[in-house]
Image (cartoon, rainbow, N blue to C red; front, side, top):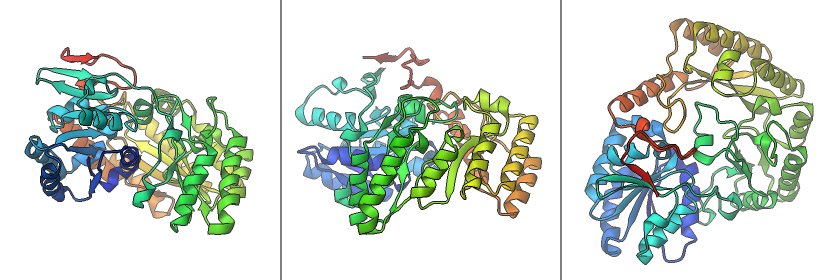
Length: 445
């Protein structure tokens, strides 16, 4: 098994490398440079009598790099007689047909692959029917697309978050899945609406492994860090969060001098989960004094339309609570959301100015239509000149930041790829709800 180890997708690749590494009889190789992949395949295909698999994990924005896109297409053509090519990740899960027809991959892994990828490799090795493995999308005999069916959501406690034996680490994934299903976001549609949590003991074990390697800052991956251990929508499990933070702190801080970062990048928190008790709890244990909150827009009409399930007042209240307890909020906003009007933008700007007065930092993004989401076919986000002018004033005051201008260009590029037929979300199979795609040539087994 050869992984193209693109660091932009390392949070997806590391768990997969770990899941395959523990399978006996499968050798795993990581290639970090795209221009070195073909040479590696030439050597390994000879060594293993053409019994090799080349795997990629893709983010949609990676395809906006013209050179990268052309290299992937060229590589898939060159190696098809030597190596099976597979792809997974958020983009491939949302656009399996485009991944096969446009990019040239043979098999697409839809959704979570920690279970299906090792099973796929074992099936190839043993000469078994790969169509018995769930979660795989393919074109059979150049005539008909098949989807082998959605597998059960995995128990993340059964899989490593990273292959620590290779000295490859990333923030520890503590929760997976999201019950909210915001229409612009891939998380629910990729991982499902049932939130699953890694056990406190296992999280602490991985944190200690990191600490032993000299990694003193312990960070986490979660779509909503304050939902850890909770099974009820909008409810904080204070006991679970405190037990998690206390366990890691008391077990590791005296010996290794670790620092715990919670509710900060690459995680965030939903505003309705923040109250005085949460703020006091975090203040007791965490090293960060900045908490990332997802607001996305200041327009209540738009908040309802995109499926956020909270209003703008909740955001203002959350920031005020954090400020009162000595935290600074970093608040995410997405500009250019579908159906956004000038009135919506004026409301957003008004909320942004109020937040800035509370010493919050505004993290600006531009809407990108992502395959696999309900907004996959929406127009790319565009930011009007008058809004940019107002935002530049806030940035100049040190109250706002972000890659919003670069993302505006990326959004346009993604839309161009869709119109050219490189990205084909209209035909894609939805891994979230098993809706039959537009093409009659696709069959679910």
